[in-house]
Length: 252
Image (cartoon, rainbow, N blue to C red):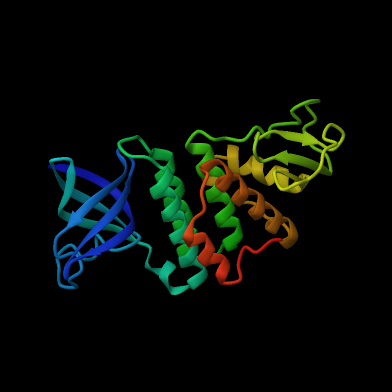
């Protein structure tokens, strides 16, 4: 028997009453678990294995597959489902993590990031664009794709009114050093947006979500962090398309 704590980030129906769930765990990354009678409301495990439940799980591992024996709820992020915008972001986060977090790997800081992001999504007291940007850039940092944004890559200038971030090379340049075109791979950023990106990458978790930007700069930050994640993961996400279909995140 294996005992783990984890967050249910995806669920898929199987037959009339069963389902598979994807659980993000600290010890083993994302695992797929078979849940018998998991779709029955009267099931003893219904609460602990529902979408966005953070629970204690007792699992059996047989022939390379996980099977749920029992679970106990630690926290339910059910309020996320009361707002379509926040639900869309949570689904987007879940799809990205399922794709990129990996299996059988230690994911302590990743699950901490997701739990903190879901906490603010459920609480509803943070701008959705801020939560999306924090997730995108910090997640990429935690899985080993941290951008080089400490200073200008050429002259070491720490800050200026405008700077250029090369999404593909991950390098930062001041406007004096970068004289090329801004073609989508190279994007111009205000100094305040650069500071926000540095905060996301380097801040301790207890301060990670504590910053503010103007609406225009928040849109710019969200556009850049989204482009950075999509570029380096090398794919699109249907859940992000749905979020944009709500009229959100269309920055161009």
